[in-house]
Amino acid sequence: MPSPTLQRLATAAIVALTLIPSVASAYMTAEDVLLSKEFFLPPTARETVARSNRQAETSAERRTREQEDAFAIQHAAAPEEIPEEELIPVDEEGTDDPAAEPTLTSTDLELLRTLRLLSRINDRQNVLQYGATTQGDALHAGAPPLAPTGAGAWLAATTMIGAVGWTLRRARKAERGSWLA
Image (tube, rainbow, N blue to C red; front, side):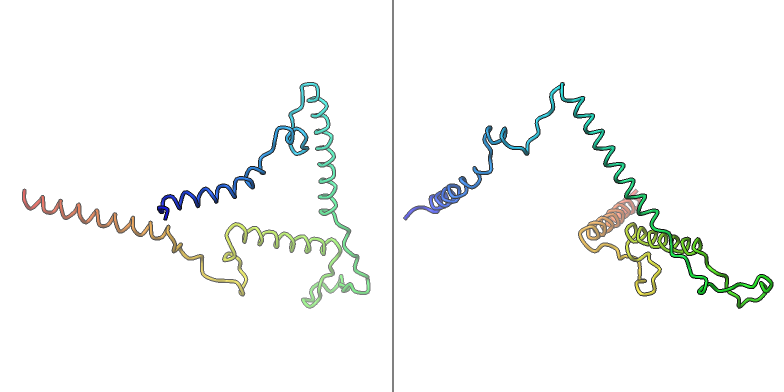
């Protein structure tokens, strides 16, 4: 019967021999690298000017496309006009009446829409920056985040206890020394 050391070496050799062919297939030969389209060879000195010009044209086209998309998003279709039948008439003579409501024009509606959108963006940025506890919603209000309870808390507590213990020890030694003197 073979020794345990010999058995371990035999097991390691069998495992290595089964894994070597699969690991060796991950490497590429020099011909594979040269024939592969994945690898990029740097341009020669003659190609650099033409390549930089192509990159500049591609970049300019991309920027133009992105700017057009951003402009289209920012300047969406004009808000719908409110039909005159739905507008609330305002008496010019009776402006003292507190019950009279002013009419909203399309500019006012666009302004309200923009304010609502900006408010939503601001709320989202607050959530991303500070977490969900900064929101003023009644449904999601809560206490501020709790102190960490993991390894950081244990490390901080140990450090504080050690500092207090060291200070008390030094104070006791200083006290004993003052009585002897």
